Image 1 (spheres, rainbow, N blue to C red):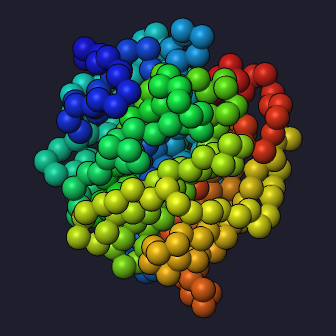
Image 2 (cartoon, one colour):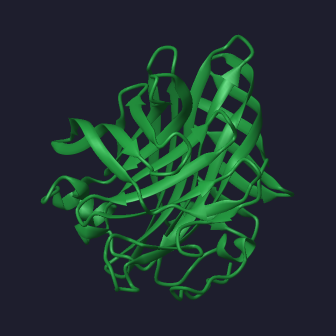
Length: 319
């Protein structure tokens, strides 16, 4: 597939930005909740990443499934190169035996690992949304157009299909979220490392917060129930607890204050222990209102440079 040039502040259509970009890191990222007829729930994640570090492009495919009943986390990651280099077409990304396809008003996800499989139709309940400043995000570094990404999402996808786990194939339904993001920013610059929160409220609204505590930079998007959206860059996130993984410190519980937005104050509490995926920390959390009532779920992604001035050299080479 022919790659596009990146220019900060100017983007094409959602379909055009689905594809490859020259001299950029970029990723296709899908997360969601799966529910069975008997009330069991599972969180899942599929990510295909093209990392460009020091002019060298590296591809990585990552798949994860979290069993909320047992707390067990299944995770796999594969570096793709040579004959296993991913295929990217105007409609499909395919790597490591898994495929994500744009189709009609949504996506089809066919995910295969040695431990489980997921095959679901992901139908968009809302149109896609450009995030932050008309689809562009400054990655924690002001006034440097290089340290930026373009970013769009389908934040409310109705899921229906099946989960294969062990010797069982289980019908599932649920809700999902798809991101496409990328740009020339340097992940080796720890100032660009982020904390990402994707709120999926039970009232059919969503919020995306992209925070850079090192510089107090923050941006985001509020997606209303009717599918309209507005920029959200006035909020505070207070870490309430921390954890350590691979000798790297990450926050792991938060109080969020968003003046004038919904109920304004929420507490984000992990539902299961987080897990480090190569060099970033990821977890599934519950969103609780002022009265302590669960009102949604939140997928959280944390990078190591936020609370660590030094991180293992191997991570900066492979992120």
